[in-house]
Length: 197
Image (cartoon, rainbow, N blue to C red; front, side, top):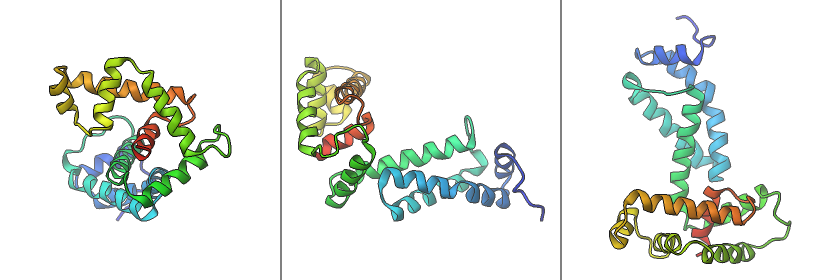
């Protein structure tokens, strides 16, 4: 059996769509470690990250015959890793163990935050930023955060389009993140705000 290690990603994808197992194995070997490392940076869990990446490759194999990859294979796999890792974060955002890991992550990664800044200080800054949001945006955001309403439920409650709800929440997160002078990314700000409720 000829080696496929010299083939490009695009060539491997073409073979994969033809049910080629060696091509799949090469993709797996080529990207497994990078994907797990990326997931660990987000989830702070080696075991969960390995499971997340395993799930991605199972899905890749199951959909191989009809797989549609826009852009590079590397970008596709990293995006998939990011999406599943964030889904894991959303599911575990209220657990004490995850809170501790995320706290470590914030402290480790937020280089521009003063060394001894506390989560209480961050919470205070976030709450102040929320009070400065435009009235409608603040209302939408608080219904999502405090009452845990879905986009659809908020849409029905306020008689506005579901897409408007999503946009308002995204804009609120962006404004709040910017109020922290970019010290914590908007995605991390959203998680942090749930933890600090």
